[in-house]
Length: 389
Image: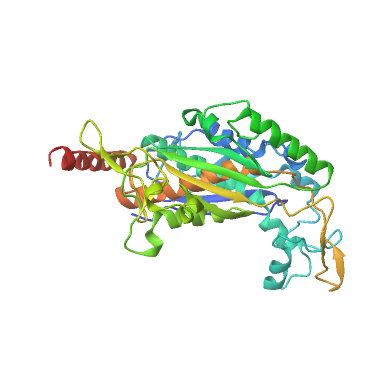
């Protein structure tokens, strides 16, 4: 039994993006339609830029799947960059360089630190790989992991709760509607808040500025006991937080009540435990966000991530030139005004991968039927321990 893991490859304007996902059990039914649906969701959203009008991301499954079922081996996923045709000369793997070098680093991006670390005089050598275009393959991987979770009765959904300071009214959110098809362009479930968010995006675009925000990811149906308190790197809360922080432009992560825990007394933070009608432990609140002691506690896992404004501004900020070492205005690349809704889809993908990884660790990963049987037996053991005890 191997660890569930994945790796992505490719540049923003290269010929294609690729991911290899290894460790999923054999016998899982996959749907190209479901993977492509999530890829399309990542490209949509109010405030997105011109690149999304060029690309229509479609997955190509290169290995690991036969007649719609996983084989147990590495799954290779590929997405072609249609825009590469306009960049072939500047992104060629061999030959002489074409086009001008990009040397004016953008504040808030990987440009300056990356050029220093890798000893590059052309910032394009950094920005191509550090671009959020890489998340295309994370979403593809996450969509496959979602299929695995769905086969085990687990669902991953998301919503945008704040853009540029315009926040939803949580009392207006029907959480049972999260994940269902909606007309929202921002993955927002408060229509009044969404209208204010759009107005803020329009205002920022006119000024050549950008906006960030906050999205929430919820994982439903997670069994108690995923993760571990035994070692720091086995804690499920730490792994989920790291996965969300790894998404480009994410600067903060909360679990459950998050930072409110620092301001309120324990009596208003900790979730009291009761017995339901069957005699099983349950909670009436979920301020812990479904995670206690580094383990899932059986409640919904609730995660929030704060995304900073995109660093590429149409009204550039002051910076330095990595070649001349002179003060300059930062370079401009085609970009979005706001991509929080896209980030929420990436957040779903990363959460899905981490939970799938934890499930494989606990219940095995050779054959889907074996995993389902092991999970069912585990649920029965827990039920008997409380009801019979």
